[in-house]
Length: 377
Image (cartoon, rainbow, N blue to C red; front, side, top):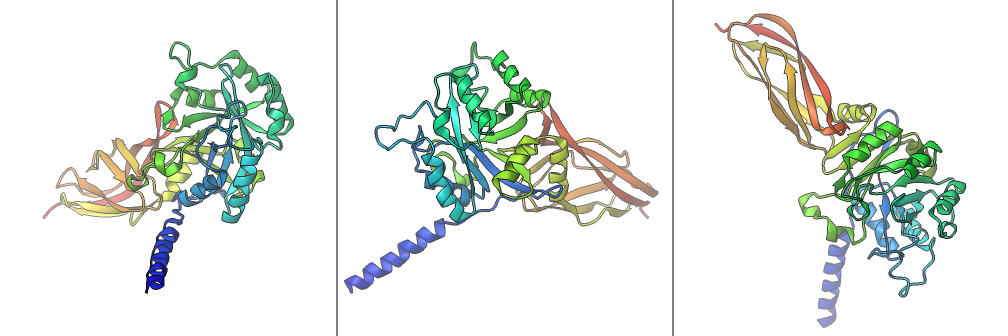
């Protein structure tokens, strides 16, 4: 009897454990012939100042629906070195082994950790992290370039490195940009958004990035029950291979995905929205001031928040409306006058307040539909 109870408890606990090991897909549509990959290129483990073993990072990414990660442990800051056999390449190697089993692309990287300027730089797609451990940051960057790394600037607005509390681009950064070495910048790091970094990305043609910079176990940092998520970089690539991801980063095919906000070039934001939204009809017939509804389906997980900018004088439309993720919402249309007659093309312009093409500019979209008005009898 005792053995039977132990067996039942084992099966019960095992079932609970297996149920928790489930992947939740991130619902963002593919666009422009590319796969929309969900990525995090700034992650730490116990091989620097993180509190997680590398295999856990790979499984966390798998559970959250990510496609690719980069382990970017610090080269210069390794507080756990007395507790582990510290080798700078080892964290990526361990994570990659588990990532390969889970079909998660694990990219080898390192964080070059220096005072400002230049601050902290991530070098990803490297071959040998050991060679980046140098006295001078310039030599570390030169070695990363030699290894054909993709280099980006981490958390440019990190308070610990600000002078007089102001975010600033230094001559060293300009020099790296002009020489084609510094190719990307974190517009979002963890929970912090830097509008200045967004401006610099647009001005200097830098790849827009958003990463978690996670140190603790991910489920201790984010409340998944409340639908919190880590910051991510959406990458538009031909496939999940390192080569395809690197090509996308070099060619700036990225968008920030952070706290239900999408930020980046309109040429990527617009097809994301267009591929997310569908209408059940676009032709309406009214009698008097009869209210009609258009059913709008959102096939993505993003809650698109819209605010009316301009519309036809013939109808009343919602001033504000949210297209809830993976839901169908009712879009209400009502004539302004009961004695209107004839046919008309109705155009409504909305701005999507959580889709930013510039720090101070939201993307605008047009809704077009046909209306036939019949006077009330």
